[in-house]
Image 1 (spheres, helix red, strand yellow):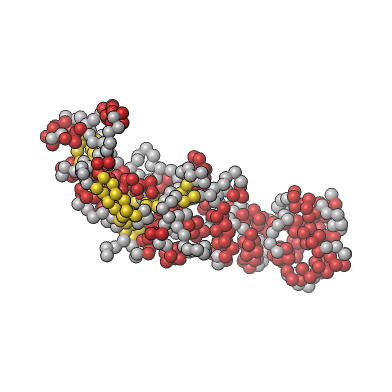
Image 2: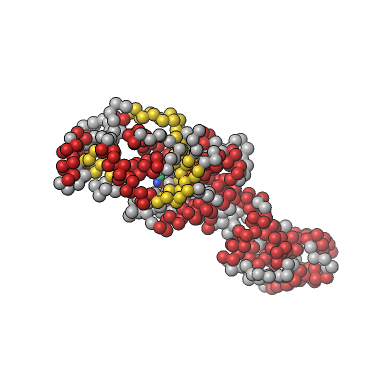
Length: 491
Ligand code: GLU
């Protein structure tokens, strides 16, 4: 079998859509499954809408996800001479023709066809011009577009890797435009010339291109080039079945937003893979290597995937499944992989200080290991980690009300602080024993002291195991915060 060569071919006209990211991922997986080549081609032929900033989004996004490409990036605009030459050759061989219809004439013809309910794909009357007439009118400077001469009475058949057998009668395919009147090539031409020149063996892309495929196959036939295998991927839609767009659905549609909001790249890959594909009954977390082993393009769903975006609630800022998957990764990934990611977040929030205390590294490991249990996105680390990294943290009103403004608490926290000061060892276990003994002696529930301590030490009423919080905060800060809280308790 010939070598598998696939490509990801984004148009850099805006942001990197999550649907595009999934297309890139599936191409990458397919290449890696078959010892193939993954080509990156930037389809920047739309000069008005393409921009360099947007090219950067694609490169950054692919790098972030770890989807390394083997060839490229090839910029399609740099190949327009090849595309024009191919169009000229197709005119020469009779597979294409110049159409001199003015825009007004074309509009009138299409309106007439619609009024008469004429069936079949559009054919220009200039399809029948003799070669001499066509050459003469072109030489006289009359503007023209180049149309493909769709053969009559044939069928185009292909077996899509996802959608299966597709059949289209050529009579229903219009004589599509390949070159505009300014000589600029259009998508169907450029994509086929490039895919053929780059020897792409499998074209894996969004389902929105399924309807272009018969036209492209006709082009391959006309060029005498081998047709690639096609595989189209279902669309990713909003819960109300609308197409996901930034205009309607906001930033959650953009891949890089996930990077900036604290997603772990592998969680994103995992989530993207599950949009439209499932590894089987048991859902589990899959690394890129697992995906290469397990993914099966023929098992991709034909029906469109739903992105369960709820919106409106910051806690559900994207599909809850995506957040849950990310939380799973944060909880279970090797700590050594997580720490640099968290450090970046801490630096961004100006909470990182080298040599925070003498045991910086161990201390840092312990805090992050403790915090990660309850954290779902990396950007929560500076938020929840603030009381550990800084003395300047907020006392949440709700927590104060619940845990500090408590009958019977007056005086207890400073007394508990006195006892902690005298402990020989200061770790979770001894602090716990001391807290329980202290509560017993004072004939109060341990919860009164423990919950009060939580708010005194971290400003919140939820968090990791409280005795471990004492341990990582250390004796000095714990004691100081317990004493400082008395002003709130009695205030
Ligand atoms: N540039 C096209 C797009 O972004 C991709 C075309 C293709 O994959 O054939 O939709």
